[in-house]
Length: 164
Image 1: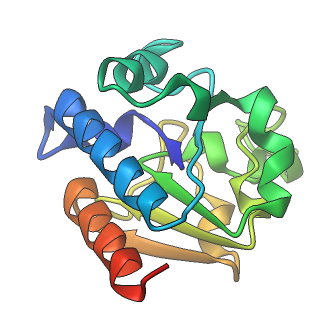
Image 2 (image 1 turned 30 degrees about the vertical axis):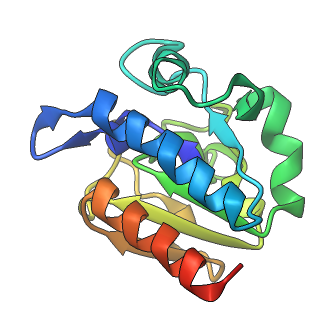
């Protein structure tokens, strides 16, 4: 899972503590279903560097499944499913490929290299940079619009229903 502050905000107000507490429960449910779970955190995710790490740690998400970008990027190519929650610019392949982009050269989470990517967003808006996210148009990417809490609850239930 690649999480960003956008995944912790809904309806214009901060719900980050609640979302992260629910994340711990979701992790346990997914692990019980045999799903390997890791959190990929970009260094600038959140409202300040380290913000998402703190929120996840406070919520009780085990430290051993929270990874910084440089420690997890190589794993995306061997990942079956990358679940991107509320992130935009920090997973945009334009940072690697589009020299005319204002985000060109910015290190990103390589979520686009996973076999399948699901992006959970509240709407079709662009990230902070205002740049269209090329990931959203990749064949291996599916967009899931809605409140992150509701969407993630439904996704976890679907995994449980599959008996995975």
